[in-house]
Image (cartoon, rainbow, N blue to C red; front, side):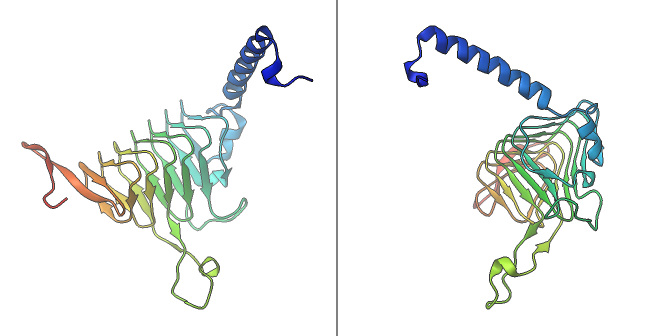
Length: 217
């Protein structure tokens, strides 16, 4: 059989059209909406929400709550715990609010409590987790030491740029902006802009004065 480069142009055009139409059909049928039986596996799956195809790793859905009119992009991982079938100590473990959009290829990896509010948008490849390894024992490999969980929350109306990492114990306020590639380890106040690793506030909104740069940022 001749390789793609050796096919006649009309064959290539016909094949490309067929593949594009087939992929469109697969992504449409493969998406999960509220009426899909797969949506019943979740603790909550709100009206008008969509889990796009193809998904990333998704397991222990009963501990994951998704609000209404939210979109979870393709290749997004949503997980509760370390393995399918694990009994969790909290419910929900991962909570996503209404009208929130999680960007392509992102990872929301919960073990105790991740709260993502309403009207949030993230860029692609954002990573949010409430668990991290510890290294107190210098003689034991880090990967064998029992990890530690700290709750994570992201306030409603916020925007997380491409490649943002949100680590255990982080608290992002309402209507905050986290610049692309930033690593959030602590608290980011409401109505602020934070960038860097670790993320630091560089702008804040002052009522009656507007957005102002933070001195020393």
